[in-house]
Image (cartoon, rainbow, N blue to C red; front, side, top):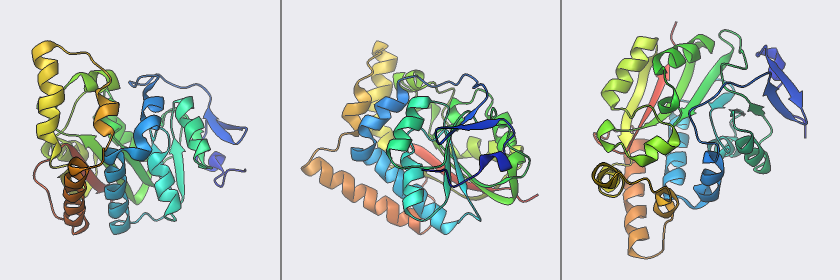
Length: 277
């Protein structure tokens, strides 16, 4: 399989080895080494990952890219694969080699094992970028967004999701290497300060904050719990009444988001922003 996209045209510090692009040296990242493998075990069956995928895809259809979407920090390519399957040309940029290998197993052709900065992309060379639960891993999120803006072409689009509300902080955030959680207000200010114009913003997973607070935040705050097996259990969607309720809530929320309603509360934020200058 030969990659569809010649990355040397737009990046100065990459080389192709066995159908995978690599940067010459990769910076350290705030993400656990085993994180991609844990996610790979649960993504396909997780109501959380699947609903997030559906919401992302719906917004991409509402705000379509001009050209290739670069999925920055896209892990195992779960979002990348969906965009590919729906006809969007995509490029996965992921510094973790295990994530890249898992994405290749999923049939993704355009793969770059690198941080975004290490690849040394040229100015204004990218038409669309996705950062899905990535920004919270950046120690300096403002500088990172300015870097993305610099590499986007005029009218280029940024799609992003982040975890919501600092008061929901738990051991999960520590383990994942998060620096912070966001509100729509703090995220909006950050994007505007970095030079973006907001096209659409909302919370989603509107039913999750109470569950997160009760089952993650409270144990962490009260008992200093450091258990790490919560994630796999939480993402499993068992059959029965629970599944029926979750599916009903997700369907209703997706309908609201597809109509571009603004949901005032939720466990995550999603924003579509654009570079206009």
